[in-house]
Every structure is written in structure tokens, then in C-alpha cells.
Length: 196
Image 1 (cartoon, rainbow, N blue to C red):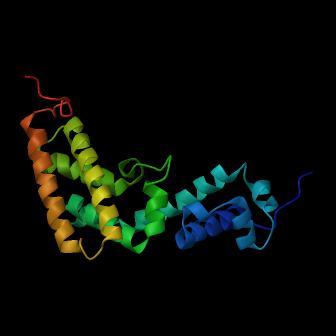
Image 2: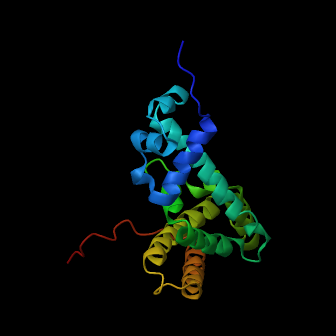
Image 3: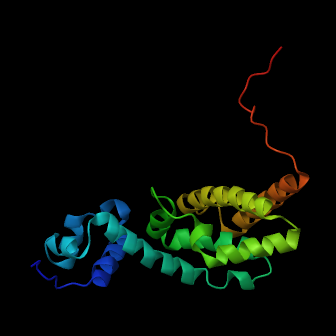
């Protein structure tokens, strides 16, 4: 009969999340988690099949924190811009969680996990007369831009204050929207040399 752990799955996942929040994902290991719990790594493997499962449970808890942080973006006049700015604020406030949720291998894509992002997509579709494919393309392009800007703003906060970041997001949003609505497709030959 396997030995019963004195910890619950929730306690182990919560401690793993706390470690990620405080020290970063790279510092999370079975040995470090056991030490943080005041035991060996054995109780962890009594409750979980491996560290991937622990990480998955910790990611669910981190998603809830992010979800709560974004909970009312659809109530704003420009929900997508608010969503983007909050993503940036979240990354500045919770840098380790941002990297854990969005910048790790197998990390979730925001619009797959967040109902607020889905509400933003519906709002974009209705406000700008976009079809499903266009709104998905707009969100995908803006997601890449927003994450890049967020990483810059996190590392170089003084060069990217919120008002500047907001302006940059607006310019990029409207340029991308206009391009998508034009029906043009980006050139796939952008890196080819000119022929004589």
C-alpha cells in the first residue's frame, strides 16, 4: 500500500505557484519544491505522476490569478486596448507569472484560456464588421505585437511608460485593422533579392 502524503495536491500546487511567483519557473524542481514544503520530493510523487502534472496544476492556479486580473475588460469602451494594457501591467507586477503563463514551452495562448479575450474578439467583430477569420488574424497579429511590447516595457519600463505603450498599441491596432480590412495579403517574398 503506498504511503499516504501529509500534503494535499492543492497545497503542493500552491507552493509550486508561490515558488514560481517569487523565484521564477527556472527555479522550480522536485527537490526545491520538497525543500519549500519541508520534506523530501517523495510526497510530491505520491500525489502527482511527475513534475509536469505539478506544473500543470500550478499553471491552472496562475491562470485564475490572471483571469481575476482581467475580469472586467469587456466593460471598457475599448476592451482590446484595455486587455493589452492590463497584460502589460500584469507583466510588470507579476513578471514571473507572465513568463510562466505565456513565455514557456507549452504555455497557453491567451485567447484559448481567457473568456475576456473571447469577449474582446466578439466586440472587435461587431465594432469593425469583421468575419471570424479576420478577427482571429487581427488578434493573432496584435497578440504578437503586445507580447513583444510587454517584454520591452517590462525590461525598459522608463522608455515605455503606459501612455507611450497605449499610443503604440493604438497605432499598431488601427494599421493592422486597416490592412486586414483591405483584403491584401502580406508578401511572402519579403526576404527575396530583387531581380535585375
